[in-house]
Length: 219
Image (cartoon, rainbow, N blue to C red):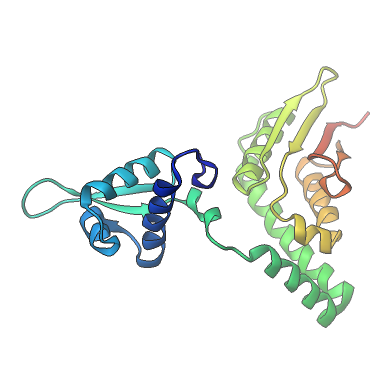
C-alpha cells in the first residue's frame, strides 16, 4: 500500500510522513531517537512505524545491547523511494539530448549499442538455465520486472509466446530517442537467436497500454 493513496486520517498521514522524512534525512534510527527528533512520544512513533511496516515502506534490523533486549533500528525500504522527489527521468532525457547535440546521431547510436551489449551479457548469463523457449521468455520477463517493466510471459494456443511489458520506466527517454526501442528489439532478437521470430504487436509510445512482443519459432 502506498501512503500517498491511503485512506488513513490526514493527521496520521502527515505524522507518518514526518517519520519517513526523518529516516530519509538522518538514516536508520531507533524509535526513542525518532521520538526526540519529532518531539512526540516513543509510543506514538512505534505506532507509526508499525503501520508503515505493514505498508512495506519501512523495515528494521535488530541490534544487540550489552543489557536487555535487542533494539530495532528502523530504515526506509526501496518501496518508499517513489514518495520522494526524483528527477532521473528528466536527467535521462537531458543526457540524451546533450549526447546527440555533442556527438551527433552516430555518437548516440554508439552509446546505445554499448548499453545493449551490457544488457545482452547480463540477460544471457541469467537465461543459461532455461531449457525451452518458454523458460527463456519467463526468465526474461522476471528480469525485466526487476527493472520496472512489470513484464509477464504466457504461452498462446498456437505455441507462440506473448511477452508483455505493462510499464515503461524509461518512457520519457524512449520518447526522446526512438532508437532505444529499436535497440531493445535487437537485444531480444540476439537473446533468442536467429531461429526465433520476434514481433512487437503493441507499443506504449504509440498509445497502447503496454508493449507486447510475439515470440515464435521461424517456419
